[in-house]
Image 1 (cartoon, rainbow, N blue to C red):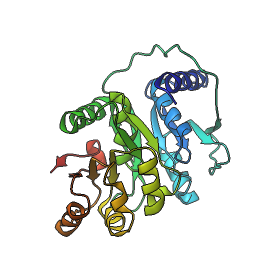
Image 2 (cartoon, one colour; image 1 turned 45 degrees about the vertical axis):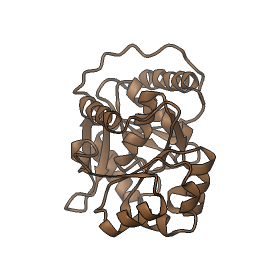
Image 3 (spheres, helix red, strand yellow; image 1 turned 30 degrees about the horizontal axis):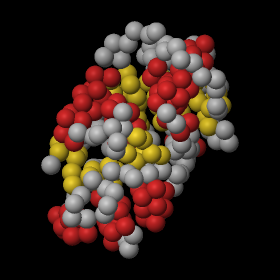
Length: 273
């Protein structure tokens, strides 16, 4: 899909959301598998002035009910074939292919407006919504580009479940700088062979791992097949063992390994090494 097609489809969905009553500072739920349609939906929600709230269809029904109720959403976009537990005051709209529109919604957003709300378990075990603003997200992504200088010909792989905040930079960083965004198939982030096939097929230069999955990837017989493609691996979410760092450099000598960390409340990451 070209940038023009992506923008036109996101515009059309944004106008539909606006017709449904979505406005600046609204929160819109999204329940979808990893797909191009998911990317379009996230962009459309932002274009409509709203913040997106990921509702992972794999979560238990009681958790999804708490998230819908606590977030204050009035509308949920559901991918075709996905059903969520329903609350009376929340409208569910099927996410499907729409007409295209070259016209961008003419909305005035403030940098302090919400961009997304991601739910974490917190210390109590009860889901707790964390809202992040456009200025915080912009600062985080601008820093990332200054630090890593992603080029227009490169490809970033989106494989983190969108209910985790590392997915935010996977979606939006490449699209901010004219790079390519490749979407891993649902479930592919757990399968090293499928992951390697995706990396090679789409010439992925940049991807994210939590250290435990990086360990499984490096110890698989397939990681060496990515030597000519990968440029940088970004780790976050857990402590990165020094022994794992050594293994990465032993197997993939030309690949940069970056260790990031930060709580969801602080717009993805606050430390890097």
